[in-house]
Each structure stands twice: as structure tokens, then as C-alpha cells.
Amino acid sequence: MTWNHRVLRHIDAWGDEFVTFAEVFYDDNGKPEGYSTVGMVGDNIEEIREIANRLLRAADQPVLDATIFESEV
Image (cartoon, rainbow, N blue to C red; front, side, top):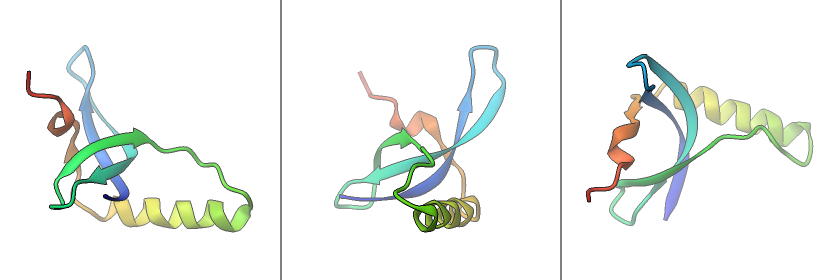
């Protein structure tokens, strides 16, 4: 399993769109299979800078629609 930071598009209960940063996890075939919210926590300032740099790189990637993570029931 691999992961990276991405921007996710969400729709709230009122139909308004918003975006968030997330850690997106991929299966062995590269298909997104889950995500978690991003926290800016590190052991030192260098780790915080690295997270900030990964978030900036994520902002350059296509936005993922959060509905791709909804389970098919």
C-alpha cells in the first residue's frame, strides 16, 4: 500500500462544495481506497516543513472527488 497527500472535493448537507487536504491510501494497483484527514504534527520544525511541502505538491495534482471512497452497498 502507498499513500500521498491529495486535495479532496466534498459536498456538505446543504449542497455546498468545499475541499480538504487528505492522506490518500492506494491499493497495489494504484486505485485510491481510503483517506484520513491531515494533521500538521511533527517531531520538529523540519518535519512540519516537509508536510507543508507535500501539501503544496498535492495542490498541484487533480482534485479527487470524495465520493470515490463511498462504499458500494
